[in-house]
Image 1 (cartoon, rainbow, N blue to C red):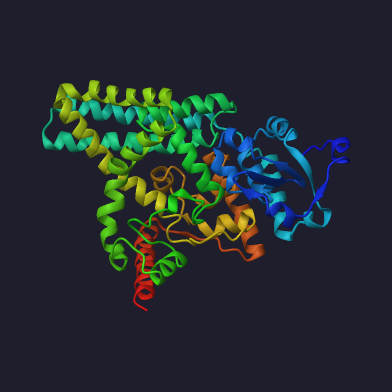
Image 2: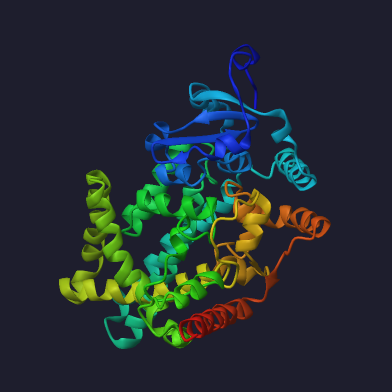
Length: 431
């Protein structure tokens, strides 16, 4: 980061201990590259959401800031007005891991691994419309018998899930150089093509990336109403005699709750609630256009009510694909309270990979490279395989666990980890 030494000469010096005390809703400081910023007011206007800055308040957020911002020079203009001091020199010492990680980040930029391949994303975008067209044509030519009905649904599920993977790329600003065009494409795919809120996705997903599998900071691990995950929370809840369900059996009822119901039931309630609560009327209107489009496409075959039921059926099938694929990288990993780890150890504790193959890469939207994706969230996914050997070398040098497994083993580990967590809760509950 380029510093204005004239300004710094007049600013106070703070220790990391002093900075750590400024972590409340009305008093938020963060440190970036040796400089201290008061983000209390700015956090409410932060594009990534207030929670994202709140979760880093009182910390050195240098590596997270670098990971999330490709347009650093532009962002620095906003930061300059928030600068209130400098981190004490003794507290700016880098560990060997920090130095190696930051060197790897610099090397990835020198290798042009943040450059986007337009043909790659054109092909992935084209398949979405191709599969949706096949879904519609199946009913148009073959009618609504149960075989065309199922075949059409499978085509539509594929279109919707692959659109889900592609919107993920736009959401991480990994397709276009232009921030604006990434946002426009993200809104088109999420709101118009999938009937979900892009703002809601940003709110949840960036929190997840900043603090993966950290209780009360990652919204994706707030599952206590139906599931206990990890080793710590089940024991804490069990000792307090807390719980809503017989978690010792959660590995059995998992099949009937999260995979089939997350998208068609839970998300269809959470998203409208989010839009209404925040009064995002424009987003709500764009989202409604998805349902209008769906009714126009399928009501002539199935009637208005039938088209709505068909939508829920497609979401039911898609939900299985989505849940098994997104949870295989995180649920079997460490889930715990905040430990204030540095960027690399924090991400590796919470993520694992699935072995690469043409099918696995396509089926998971390249999220089988979850470790690389979490370390480099704005890197285009077609470059994960290029950076992977360097990440493995870094992990080997510093004794960090780099876990990669076959796809089916990853699915099995979800159930296995739920079984272990449920047993921990049951044992603690009955002490």
